[in-house]
Image 1 (cartoon, helix red, strand yellow):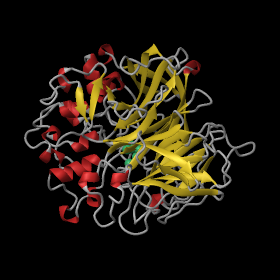
Image 2 (cartoon, rainbow, N blue to C red; image 1 turned 135 degrees about the horizontal axis):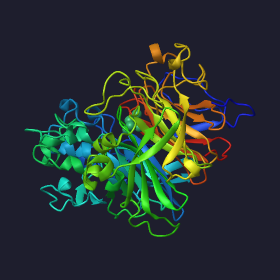
Image 3 (tube, protein in one colour; image 1 turned 45 degrees about the vertical axis):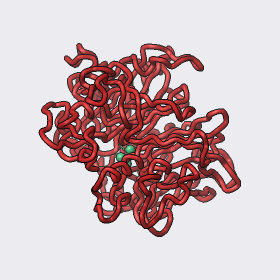
Image 4 (cartoon, helix red, strand yellow; image 1 turned 90 degrees about the vertical axis):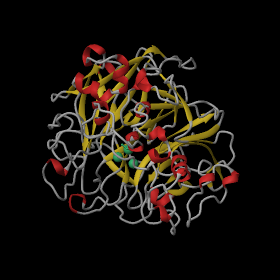
Length: 564
Ligand code: FEO
Ligand code: CA
Ligand code: CA
Ligand code: CA
């Protein structure tokens, strides 16, 4: 890795670690909570949230959901509109104490379903900074029961037909919305990650590798299957095949129907990073966040022309799995009937099995992928993998150490980057290196001490969220061990750091309350304000008393200058 030779490109003084229940940013920056779990999106939900009882079921789809995650900000005729995921719920925080974290009736299930999914909300800058515009015509909640369309080659197939939807084309809900993406035509992509956790089996589980490899079976984490037969795999064996996709939402039209894009494959999607190939085709990089699973790339068959129709671009293309060679070269292996021995529709339903058959490289949990806006270069956070070199993945492949995943029992994680051949994102080949290996140089003086650009002053573990600012700096968010002890001594709370792709330098910009991860990042249109997600905080942040409330925080420079 190249070391800093000239002047630093950081426009802030890096901060130290923290172990408290506050948010910290560098001198000269300010932060304020933009919106918290339970805050009203419409006036009728004003005061819906109570520190004693949480959110009542009848207002649960009128407020901001829990556990904020990926997000993007859109310019809709000058209105600033954020689309943002609510990944999951903490039932013990949301349900009455007497329920002890397990829904006791259909209403309690409905409450949990409504506080997850996606929020679309207008924000505007006033004298006191940014705030949500209550009652904006753009405001919308999308929940686990919102109707959507299944599109692409798997739509209508026998594998996705159910009792409620014998045509296999109309689905309810987008679930476990983790990372995100935005299309070149101004729509939001929400990525369904651990969808398996919502399903349970009241009776016999249907047999099949396709269930095992996706972790389906046993009891659902929220008891949905007891009150809604759609989630009972013994009754609806195909319902789980209708989740685990990238779903497209039009934030400019609150009456639009979200569309599940099956051509991008079915797995535990982290985010969806869209760029354009040299010839105008659409390229989407996609991670599957599970130990020993894979990194993917989708390339459309059609080309996109700015301002033109995107029709079919996310429904007709080629999905490939990444092969990383130890000599720092790599290739994209197309998932086809020839390479997998599976039918085209099966490949999109059981993508993990197809990737194994094609011979992809097992990865240390691919989280967010981010493309450098200044050059053809792509980064993927490999968050950690305690089983690397030790065990196989669930129902899948062995995981010996390999080029971009070089450490056994990898508790710290790393960020791999690659440059497509000829600078073309649709090229078959690429060259890769490791941008950083996280580690703890105060505990280890071997590979677990991290790469050269890790010091006692900037160390972290478990990189997860990532996004580039327009100046070509890489913002890195962590979701790791924050007990500040043992292997993690001196790392403090989860944090957001900024990396310079040129020099390899990494500097800490933000720390979040103990217990929280940092996830989700977007900027105001004028780039003066960053919106940052704080998920599953501990203590009583941000109110100081009562329940912890996941929230989006606005961060800006006191001098008002742009920094995104
Ligand atoms: Fe929801 Fe892989 O993070
Ligand atoms: Ca994540
Ligand atoms: Ca994570
Ligand atoms: Ca999370």
